[in-house]
Image (cartoon, rainbow, N blue to C red):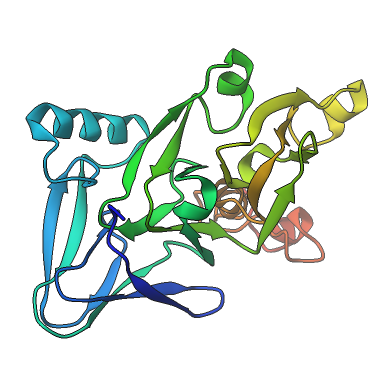
Length: 266
């Protein structure tokens, strides 16, 4: 194996974190801001690029960092190494309610494609790159744009998702239609495309957008019930207005209640 072989434990239900046990000289890489806690004896280091290898050279590191910028991530990643003789633990937390999914990349042919902000952490040696869409329609209307994250290697990687998750194993030619924001990721054998919802009523009044994501097997697909974008939109919709009053969606009278409460000035 080129990646470090790590042990782990996922703790919690709705706000999970992953605890990773490192043997001496083992390491793990993570997105900046995902660190939660670590034992004494672990050294934290900042890496320029994806941290997949030490011999990338200057140009290789710059190229790796540039790829991360295209996915909206920081130029830098953090690495954690066990530098003492005994086993040590380091933990990383999800940024919002949901689940952490462990992925042994050897079970997915050494490659897994996920949405841009799904990656949490991985064993040292796993490469975090980008996957370009070669189809114009998918890039424009697929929800994730032209670029997704690509995890490559033979070690463990961890991604996070919102709400409850589902794992779907598709056979050859089997198709699954998904809301574009509900995709967590999929194995390299999956064909990802988009499909027009169809129908004037569905298009205008359906409220589900104009396109489905279509994933065709063979391969494995992970789906989330609550994309962070959907959660953020609901929070913004219920946020207080400039005057400090809420929209009153939770009251029986709604807007009339605001009127009776003196919220409207004439």
